[in-house]
Image (cartoon, rainbow, N blue to C red):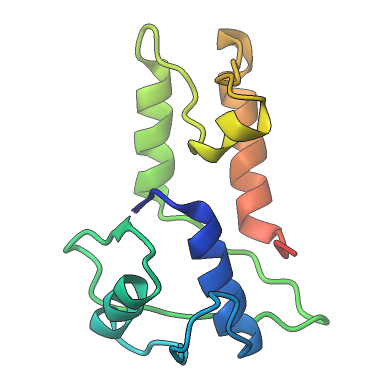
Length: 131
């Protein structure tokens, strides 16, 4: 999925997690139970995200402080991203907000590090608490 405004997306996630509205509007955002509800809330929150038609379900996992949760990505996604990184001239893609964090410059990941960064990001994604 492609998100174009990560801050609003993060605030919507924080709203679902805490029940407190971080979007500074008068809407309510109960945790969606269907993909249609998910899309409706994205629109209401002005989160510009494309949700491909292949997604038929939405699942929220509320992590407990005493439980390790490892989110395994689909194997095909790992294989696809590795194949893309093997192509001549391929670079490791980073979300656009990284450019803001690097003072307007695109962060450059050396060719020799792109598979290392891929492994680090996959590992971080699968186990991070994100807070």
